[in-house]
Length: 429
Image 1 (spheres, rainbow, N blue to C red):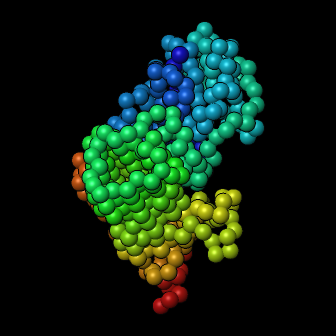
Image 2 (cartoon, rainbow, N blue to C red):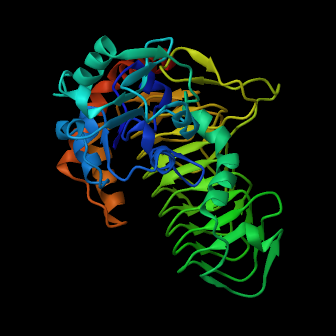
Image 3 (tube, rainbow, N blue to C red):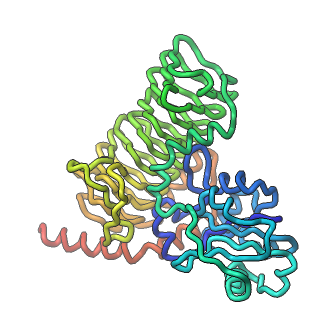
């Protein structure tokens, strides 16, 4: 059997913007791994392929070993096609020994399709969309309401418990790296794993009393850092005298200082200096200037709202949600983000001395308190190329084509914000 994980284009993808603009939803992190890794582990199927929005297919091929958007993946074997938003527990609801069938949500979302090889000959497998459409029309379909991820903040809020579950599932503990003296370990040594190549400097506190701590390969922890579990630090990341509070999942190649709590950082991003990041999701290639801080709690302790389309507030149902920050965004020193802030990808943010608007569109130059076009996307691309090269990553033609597509995709919200900014500047003169 072949596992096919898919992320289809559609309006519901916006629920995971800005961090899903430049990657499949199933590449987002929660706990110690990505959603795709969790599905693959649960399915226990070695043969895996995937389908993603067409505009990101080429750069994604360079990041994965799985076939991407290849119609040949839809033939030659029994298929288990699963929506990348499914939680692993949803796979328990599928009878893999049963006949071909399709699971559909009440709103029409296709959650999975189990397709027997014998049935594929009467289905149009020229593309994922044609195959799913034929399967719905010709095979047994049942309405289901499976456990699934619906918004980016779902991942943030679930991540602390997920770290503990992932740690237990891996079954690893102990020290394979180097821990220099003096140091302090609180809690059980069975709730700590320090991988080979990792180095913990003197004067570090690791507190595993309330959850496990996993430091992956080649992690470096500088003096006067405190790490509270549950916590995962990805490969080659560095903690620089950080107050790493509970619930953090930090991806590979990050530089983190200051205070961070219950946040997810996708990878390759810098929060080098003091400042607070709480209940936030930060993409890749982000640089948060010194003292950049987000609020994650309203003064009235009410449910935090997030604006995903530039217009409509959505209640998260949680009293704690911080900023959602897209890839390649840069903030100046002293930047202050409101609770539930949407900070678009490829944005350049200049401080105003007070909390910024809750919605800053993608590719925005936020200067003097208004959204402008600034010096355009070409200048942002040049910065991205420089930043990526510093970590031995290439800004390719495929990468630029993807970002050109994202620029067009996000134009309506940005253009409206720019028009509003022009009106504000005109009124001030």
